[in-house]
Structure formats: C-alpha cells, structure tokens
Length: 212
Image 1 (cartoon, rainbow, N blue to C red):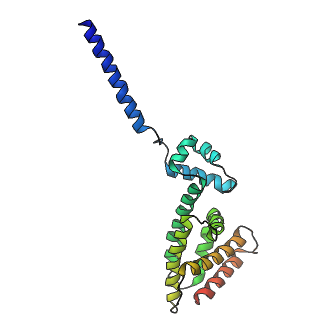
Image 2 (image 1 turned 180 degrees about the vertical axis):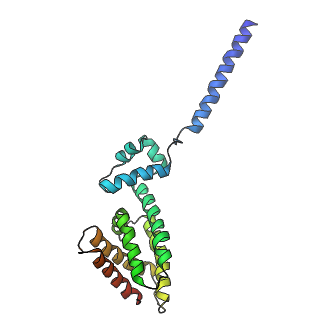
C-alpha cells in the first residue's frame, strides 16, 4: 500500500513538472513587460541624440533593458526598426500637416506647417531625405510617396488638369525638393532666418502648384 502511494506521488510530481514545462514553453519568447512601441521609443531617444547611423542595436537593447534575443523577436534587424519608426513619423506628418492643410487658401500656410513639423522632428527630415532616392528604399518611404502623390494630385487639380502618367516619380521630385529646402535651412542652417526659409518653400510650392 505504501509502495503504491509512493508510486502515485512520484507520478503526480512528474505530471506537474511536465505541465509546468509545457506552460514555460508556451510563455517563452516575448517579455510581456516589453512592447514593440517601447523599444521604438528607446531607439528614437538614441536616434535623436546620436543619429541613426551612429546608434547600434546593442545600445538600443541596453536602453530598453532587454536581451538582444528579445529585440530580434520584434525586429528583423536595425533597418526593420528604422523603417518602423519612419512609418510612425510619416503617418503623423501626413495626418497632422499635409492632409489638414491641403485645402488652405494660401500655400504659405502649408509651408509654415511643413517647416514647423520638421523643426520639431529633424530625424524624420534627415532619414526620409536620405532614403527617398535610395536603391533600396524602406517600405515606409514608398508608402509615404504614394500617399503624398494623392495629395499633390488633389492640389494640382484645383488649378488645372495635369496629365502626368508616372505620379510616383513626379511626387518623388516634388517631395525631394521640399525636403532639400527644409534640410538646408534646418539641418545645414544655410538660411539667414525662419522667414527666409518659409519664403523659399512657399515659392517652390507656388511654382509647382501655380497658386498663391
């Protein structure tokens, strides 16, 4: 009787260990206290102070307080991380700046909004400009070009009917020039004043859209 009881207890212990191991395997992987957004926020803080190119995955991992393996559960590599962050900012840029101001009566109001946004978020300006004409652009950059092309088309059609067949290429030219003006003024600091920057960008947009 005693032997049977001991055998039963051993079997029960083995069963408990077995189910605990299954539970451990099921929960192994992503730390629930860490989120993709949290890692992105830590990376953004580093990118803003050190720049994207000078920031390593190891530094992002250290700032996030996670193991390197955890990082790779959320992102394939550094490019995947950067792409996710650009996607976040470009969506914000379109939602907060371009779309609300696309029907304003004067183009200078849109120019002010663009300059104001890039002044607050220079990292997006640097990375979007660098990636726009890259041989291997991030998916988020192409998504931005496609979204921006619809807005440009709407602007152009307010004034005359434009017959452009390759809107993506046309949009890259327009967006590239907008980014160049902002980059030279805000990053390289070549303009003498904020008013000069605004006038330069307004003049560029007026010439493209043939409007006031």
